[in-house]
Image 1: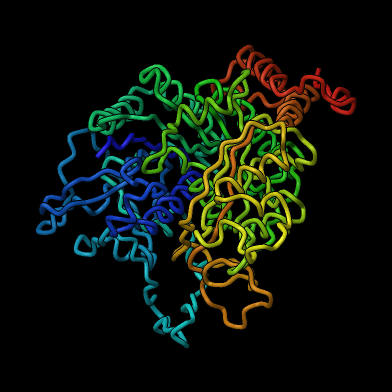
Image 2 (image 1 turned 180 degrees about the vertical axis):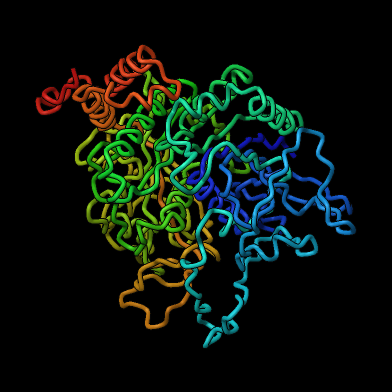
Length: 579
């Protein structure tokens, strides 16, 4: 068997933890025990992100190759050291060789979805068996008919922090808690970029980070690189800047893909000038530093925009999500992330993280935008050519990078993944001798259909595309926020379903794009900050950001925005200058 081409993941911040919790759950739900299916050309190779270990009792474990940083009070009842490596006789964790700091706090109530994670004897097999369990106080989940999916209880009231919907065991070296700052409350907040930078200048945290990096990297046979999920709106943007700088310095030549995450912004926060301005400053400094230290940087958010006057969140046609719940919004972003990162996780794909970045970051365009259709709209018996031809608008995806409406914005390059299209759906199913409805109906393979469609809607774009048969499995505790016009397999129905059955899997379209529209997005950040006297917010800069460094970052942002200028663009575009 070929080398796994391993990737180490870093999650920095609470919202990054929320997206990560759903993402690991989506991956674990797709584990396959069928040796033939698991080795198929299009199958996901889970060894890329997961590692094999062994407990004190000799039992094999399978955990993410993950380093996770969050604040005090963010873990709820989840133990920092996990439970896989706990001595069941003494109920004590495996002896830790590093420094220990003891903190005594009142215990948090255990969320029902964490109960089995707290018991070593509850270690589950790695086949993705996530059958809904009976929660305390609920009736047994029994389908009314054999062909009907079980009705799912509403879980929103039970989901307060990301550990409440984590369904994946973590290694003892995964979680690194920052005790200087609180997750909740108005005091001891990690709210400024400079605070985050200073934390990683502290030898204690830097040495701990490097020790954990070495632990994971040294066991890799062929390290592709690192994927970093980082909160962009708070002080974790500063932590991310230092972490990616460390990765760039110590692991030169390895790919670093960074995802800057921002939850949907509460209306109340946008009306508090200091918090709103801090958020914009953190975002801008994060974009500049994270893109500088990464092969590719992509902001991910359901906000319409990330400026001082945020636009309403993105609407998804078949998802009725609550924008105020991180539990909901992070699930959407995790679904997109699981899809668009598939190319460097496939069994036989020749695409690495570095290669994926290189297809998008040419000419200095190191910031990309994400789009997705969650779910991709297709009926159960509908062919892919029919589904694509019936799309209104012709591009059925939603923006997930807060870049505003794409409109006619030119796309320089894109990496596209469409998953959940069965083999019999991939080409036209019209009877032989029937005149083809379109050029898509003339294609002989599904891959050709998708490639032809992308060329039709965007003929000047360099596109790479993957068509996968396996859908995205959305089993509990993934939220059940889907439209009643979806079947349990995520296909469109002509009439809304009468039973509130759980959707179990969905087809998904996702893409990473290098868009000309990013010029306007990045330029608007520059313009907003040039229109205000930033010296009014001296407390932000007193946290560790020098004014000269800030001015330099602004100029770098301006230069970065100019990389997305179209040569020979329209007159309207020429007027939209950021100078």
